[in-house]
Structure formats: C-alpha cells, structure tokens
Length: 408
Image (cartoon, rainbow, N blue to C red; front, side):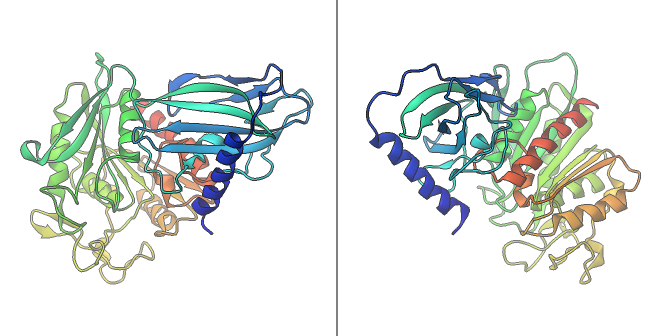
C-alpha cells in the first residue's frame, strides 16, 4: 500500500474516534503552547503541550481547511514525560500516525487530505491551523489556533496573460521599499502551469522582500499544449517585464526552475547573462532533454531553432548528442542547486554533481539530501503532504536560499 492509502485509513480511524466518544474531557489545565501563534508560513513552530499526567498517552493533531475547503489532517500519538509535557521538538511518536520521527514540525508537514486524494494544497493568504490534544478516549483536552501567513499585508498580487502581456504569470510585489531588491522568475516542471507550490514559493519570496514572478509555459491558452518546442523567447518576455518593475535590482535577477524547468532556468542563465544574473535549479538536470511526454523532438527552441537535446534520462553524459550538456560555466552569477539522493524521477544528484564539477570555483552551492526524493525541489518547508527526508531537506535549503538573496 502507498503512503496516502495507509494514512487515509489512519485518518478515518482518528475522525471516527473523535466523533464517536461522548462525555466531557477530564478536569485539568492542559495547554498547547506555541512560540509563533502568528507568523509567516515558512517560520518553524515550537509546540509544547503541558498540564498532562506523567506518562499519559495523547494524540496531537494539526487540522486545517484550505482555500478549496479541503480538510487536511496530521497527527501522532505520544506519551507525556514525567512532568506531564509533550514537546514536539524532542518527543518520539508512538503508535500509528501520519509521521513517526522526532520532528518539531512533523504534525504539520505530514498532513494529508481527509478524503484520501492528493491535497493540491491551496492556502488562504492567512491560513488557520488548529493544533489539538486528545486523550486515549478521543476527548479533546486542549486546542490552539495558529495563523500561518502566506501573503502578509503589503504584498500585492497581479495576474498577467499572454494577451496583452506576452505570458501567463502571477506577480507578487513586496511592500514598497526604498532599496532595490533581487528579483526571481519562477517556473515549474513537467506540469507547466501555475498554482500550488510555485505560487506559495513566489508569495513567500515577496513576503521576504523579493519581487517574484511565477509563470506557466505550456498547457495554457495561447501556449504550447505540451512541453515541446517551447521558445526561450517566452521566458525572455517575462524577464524583460520583471526587470521593468519598480523596486527590482536588475543586476540581480534570478531564474528559478524545478525539475524540467531547471533546464530552462540554466539555459537562460547560460545564454542570456545580460538578463539573468543567478540561477536556482531544483531537482535539476545538467543536460537538455527531449520533448515531453512523447520524446519525439526538442523541448526548447531559440530563434526558431531547436536546442540540442538528448533522449537519455539516465545521467549527465549523453551519448546521442553531447551538445545537450548545458554550459553552466557561462552563467553570470551564483548558481543554487538542490537535489535528493532518492530521486526516482531522474538522477538529479548526479546531474547536480556534474554541474558542481563544471562550475569549479564559480560561485555556487550544491545541497544534497540523503533519503530525499524529487519533491525536495518543492522548496518551501513545512507544507502538507511531505515525507520526512524531503521535509528535512526543504527546511534546510529554503533559509539558505533566502540568505543568498539577502546577501546580494
């Protein structure tokens, strides 16, 4: 059985238990303590439950309804220490739950949709999250509402379209500042579109003061229906628009691509260093691959001509067309690479390590996470429907990216 199927069963049992029991909770002063009851959604929380009996067995849950009114739930069972405390940063979960490791934010990043379907998490601008404590009879002993902010006051959103703007995008502008700030053009992988993790990342970048434009590049009206013969000029139009916005530091504009989108980000950095002054490549490839899903032609074109590509997805040294290797050493600025060693979509760590060698002394960071998979590239930490190794990787990589941008 897959993880979601197992968790759906556990979620169902928890929901039944919490609704079937009757009677008031026992008397006591159980309290849910949270260090950041209102904070940006990428700020880690420290959750402690106090006032329990020593050794008492309780279940701690995190529950929310997102912008699509989908209910999501994460939970784990613990035994209180001798002082009657459960500290999520140090306590070891016992028994069934949505995660099993000692992990401060586990009850949040392990949340899955109660209906058992993939969550496609769409947060509210400020997302309410309820942390609850239940005893072994399913009675609620205490709860606490936490506000996780994705779009704080001052951040504005603008929607752009192929006609008349030349591209599909969502622009997140930070609160007005006298200083010009690095800006980021973001795009995803083989899904090609917008929304979900891409917009979450863009919105939070703007919350930290960085103008961010998330774009889709196929599968939308007026664009190619598939990842096939996508012109790099499309991204150039978006870059030109982003560079023209108030508050953008045109000397520090980054291309940010995940999975197949990393190819476009790296190509833009290598071929248009006049526009792109840094690249973020997540779960990346060091070579240009063929079209998707049929692999019958080029994925990318420039000036109407196909860019060299390989149909080999197994490593960084293509034999069918060696020219498919991306000349990352031409990128005029820092390169930020993130990969998971358990990426079963493609060998992103061998790709990233090949770029690491090719970049040499060029300013770059390579972050490699043991046990993490392809979705470590969905870089914002502590978002629902994660697994442990991916969650740990994202929690480490995201503040490093913010530090890179803040240091420019």
